Length: 127
Image (cartoon, rainbow, N blue to C red; front, side, top):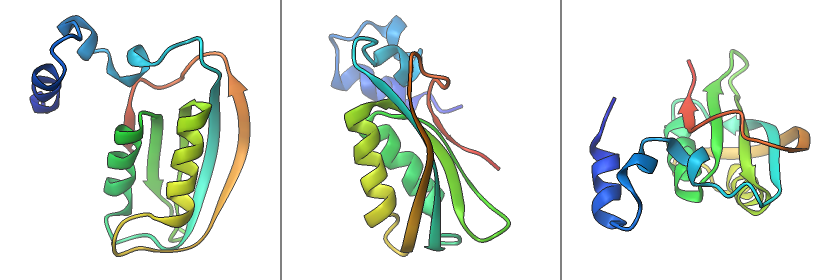
């Protein structure tokens, strides 16, 4: 586990109590905002081009939680959860941008629903 991001966050945002930094993104999200969950599968040239790593980075930058993994079909699949506007931003990124060397042919979204609480505390790459 790398503690550098927490230390960097403490320097960048000194007003956040240190005890909250270790709780992940879920603790930082307001429960008063409507939360959304959506599954996704990205088709195209999305394996061997750091797609999962860039997806994890973008999710953390946007402020959503969930996961991403490669499939045996050559696609990338996962789930995103968070405030509706942030989930929509991530959906747009998964549909149009991706990693620099990727080529997204299409992205399918399924099981989109409102949720009362987040099921994950961060965004991770699954293997």
